[in-house]
Amino acid sequence: MKKIAGDIHTAVTFVEAKRQIDASTTSVDYAGVNIPLKGGYPEGDLSTMNKILDIKTPSSYTTYWQSNSRSCEFNDFCMVGKLVNGRGPAIPGHISGKATYIWPNGYVLDGCFSYYVNLENGELPLVGAVTDKC
Image: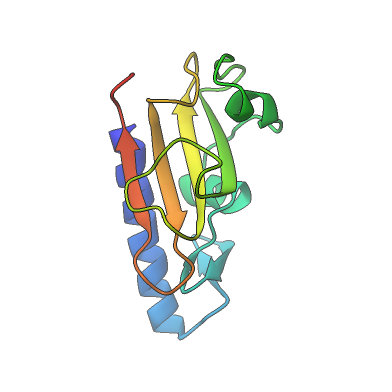
């Protein structure tokens, strides 16, 4: 989970550099893929995170994050995005913006996940990992 958080941080840093070079406010080309921006940083949604991380996740997530009793299945990771504060597990400093959670196969979304939160106000996104139940 810490490696995925590091990968997110690296990707966000590269996207930020590309945004400054291109003087763009809405999107950037990142490794041949269009990355939409919100507040100057990658949007906090599934599509964007899948593009940035180049990972594939299941197409249906509702049962996994709404019920902490079902574990991630079918792929190496599950992901849910665009969750407002209070809709998913607690993230330090998450007051505004939308969060994306990524957690490993065999785990429920509660204490073993990486996260990305675009605060949508131009401040640096929140990126990290919670590993107390890994």
